[in-house]
Each structure stands twice: as structure tokens, then as C-alpha cells.
Image (cartoon, rainbow, N blue to C red; front, side, top):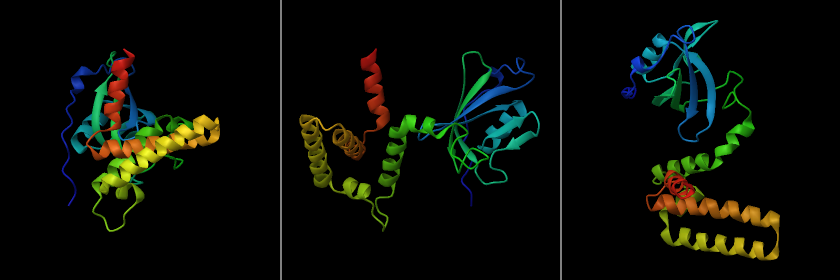
Length: 208
């Protein structure tokens, strides 16, 4: 039995389909990692199909209406649709079931662009481990999430190792230790109910 389609709160009447011969630009983003997966076009019919099915539909100038993943299985489940200030573009935040690009890559953009939000990808992995802590196969992340003393011990150890590397002026080791500390910090934060989103909100407020 398939999951029920979640209603998407989006009013098509707020879009201006007259600017580009009935089409609007759609920027599709992975909701978990923040990576931009693809840019395509949609008309009212394509977006109506999207809202009705809960999966992304687009309009190709050459191939007409198409359901992303309808043939390959790499569907994009819609989490939210948001229009831009000019009402001629849509940001679609999705959960992809597979690669977005016809070449078999995660994104239609260069892989370097996906690394821009590697922290979001890491946070998404930690969240997934958090949700499956009772699985018979236990990963290191799941061990940390299930053992308060272990994760706090490792958090302290990584902080000391980073400080030592900085004292020694060892750039390579300091870089590695920073990565280790950030990972353990995110695990510890998730274990007490926090998230990377919350950290970003704090930093954003401070930047203002």
C-alpha cells in the first residue's frame, strides 16, 4: 500500500504564466541537503499534476508534459512549493528517490556544487541514524546516539585533539580534527533534540 499523498499548500493563481508563453521556471532542491538538483519548466497543467500526485511534473518544450521518474523510478516527492517575488519561478523542495540528472548523477550541476552544503548532508545522515537506532545493524553514529557518556567523551577528546593540532601549527591535522569535532558536535546536538537548522538560525541572527 502506497503512502497517501500529502496536500501541498500552494495556490497556482499566484503565478504569472503569461511571461514565458505559459511556462514558469522551476528550481528543484533536495530538502535534506539543500543541493540544487535541476532547473526545468512547468506550466499550469504540470503543476496541477504535481499538486494532485505529490510528485514533480514538468513541461518540456520538446517532449511536453513529463512525470519526473515516471520511467526510471527516480521520482521527486514534493515537500513544498514556493514562488519568487516576480511570480514567474518556483522553488520546489523535494525528497528524491534517485539521481535527478539523466546522466545518472545526483544533480544536473557539477558535483562541486553539491559539496557546498555537505553539513546538511551530514546532518541528514545523522537524523536518519537517529530514526533507526533500534536496527540490528548499529553504526558508529547510532552507538554515539545511544550512549550519552560515549558521545560526550568523544566530543571532549576531539576538542582537545584540535587544540593540540593548532598548538603544533599542523594545518593538515587541524583540518582533520575540525571535521571530526564538527561531526561529533552535530551528533551530540541531535541527541538532545537540536539540529543544524537551529545553529544556522542562531548564526544568521548574530550576523544581522
